[in-house]
Amino acid sequence: MERNSRIFVAGHRGLVGSAIVRRLVEDGHSDLVLRGRDELDLTDQAAVRAFFDREKIDYVLLAAAKVGGILANERFGGDFIRDNLLIQTNVIDAAWRAGVKKLLFLGSSCLYPKFAEQPLKEEALLTGPPEPSNKPYAIAKIAGITLCQAYRRQYGFNAICAMPANLYGPGDHFDPEGSHAVPGMIRRFHDAKMEGAPSVTLWGTGTPRREFLYVDDMADACLHLMDHYDGEDIINVGSGEDVPIGDLARTIRGVVGYEGALTQDLSKPDGHPRKLMDVSRLLATGWRPKVGLEEGLTRTYAWFLENAAPPVPRPAPGSVAGEAAE
Ligand SMILES: NC(=O)c1ccc[n+]([C@@H]2O[C@H](COP(=O)([O-])OP(=O)(O)OC[C@H]3O[C@@H](n4cnc5c(N)ncnc54)[C@H](OP(=O)(O)O)[C@@H]3O)[C@@H](O)[C@H]2O)c1
Image 1: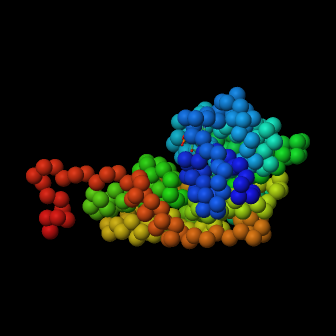
Image 2: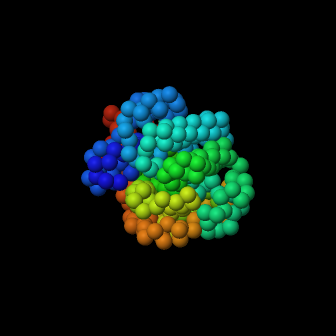
Image 3: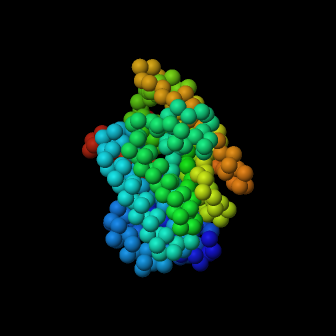
């Protein structure tokens, strides 16, 4: 992508899209096309086609999707499969029709079969059913990958597909009930610190291992793939390292500065013992992650404090805040 290329980042207000925009701006790209859902609903086929016909886009980074945790998938499965099928079909098809030079589509590590061998290799996709709780999302995304591959074969459209690991970073969603591990833990430790709670409880044994990638590294990998990869095969994007959930929790506790105890609720299930992707295909293209877990968590907590932390309650008239009283 040249500095003056016209680049559409779909989903630019989301976790991944906002990181991609930050990075493009840093790199001096000046012709970015950005539309919020209020201006362009990507599920609306006619609107998406008219947008592409009008805007003469060179490159597309498709980071718009309906994304959510297990509970949201179970409750709103119809929305997950419909919105993702519509968004990706509309954007990929309209981009090809309008002569876009290249498009990046994002899958996810959770599209792989539930019982695939670890570390997850790209070849494992479609060798078994995905985790049932996120089936509507996974089936839609796998259809998106197949669409990219079929358009490449039939029409010569240069659409590539990346499979990100669990991402975290500035712009994440810090709902305390949210099931994404990193922002959920940051929020719970932060709340416990603010409330002076004696302990925070971790579900399960803390031994399952998971892989996390800082979202600015993800953005870096997306741009690297746009410049250096033109294949039909999907490509895993991760840190290549997994960490026990208990260690993640202790690191987040340190970053947040919470001094209470970390207890375990062993009645809660552990889930898979390990989820790690094999990133050798990506590493072979010359890419390396740059931000380690503790550094990424520190940056994420700083962003949370600045942008997403709930306001500190003001002391009621006549009362004295704890610290001031000492
Ligand atoms: N987060 C992760 O850990 C992770 C891991 C693996 C893969 N991924 C993939 O990365 C991509 C981006 O995920 P994310 O975490 O950045 O999600 P996100 O923070 O929820 O952002 C999604 C973006 O899509 C936009 N969007 C949704 N529906 C739309 C519609 N109908 N029209 C226009 N825009 C719409 C949203 O707009 P609004 O802001 O207006 O709602 C939002 O900006 C997804 O494809 C996801 O599968 C993410």
